[in-house]
Length: 346
Image (cartoon, rainbow, N blue to C red):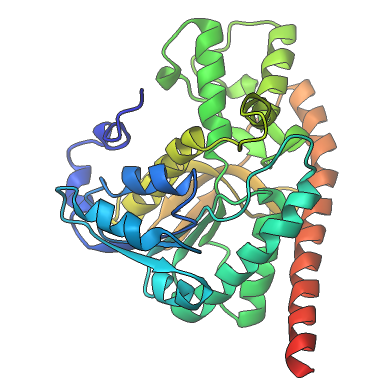
């Protein structure tokens, strides 16, 4: 079982000086859900946070009281409903968006976008007004379309900063480390492997050629593990038999990524994470790759390493999908905004 403090236990002692250098507010939108609740518990243990704002459609006032009985100095407040969304994210340093419905068995990603795209747009609008300089990290799926949609809304409001908008793909790395570690019969925490592309199906590309320690399997093993990593979300959805998607593992992954954002905000250097962001590394306008984080967000995009032939072929196949997803996300935002303006004018 994962101990909540483990996320912080690997931080070098000098880092604590950075973490305590300033106070930070983190807002979690969707805090009452299956991801939001464990995520809030994990994040409140960071010494870099002094304020934690929990928002959801209902139930967060009670969650905030529950949190208030935990013996740390973090001040937790609860906000409910659309009317309190701007208040919840106001003056936040980091906004984590976990709101939305989970993927159900047999559900296509475009159907999920129809439900969750509206959530992303409302949150992006609220951020534009209440905390335009915040780091914004989306967990809400489908990430490949949600992030371009949010970017479109932020651009329309004049508050888009490509260095500060992230789609969290850390779960793909967490799964890769676990599955590879099990295969090699080593501690998964000792495994390091970049995962590039996107956050769905074939767009998820673990780079076995860059695995450390060196992967000791053959081409067939790589193919099987890659397939499992790509379909791991479906594995969880099916196992839960219609009762939800990945929640505990996603909360773990989300907390790891947000912890890195907080450490970057407090001045720690040489922090590298993979995330789905606006990118010029490939022909796809949004792409997941290793990033060096800094106080202003993305400090630099690390160049793609030399890929194996099979990885090059996989990259060629996934890029058209990502480009299509980006257009779909942007069009969703455009159409939603146009429809809203039309309703207001009538």
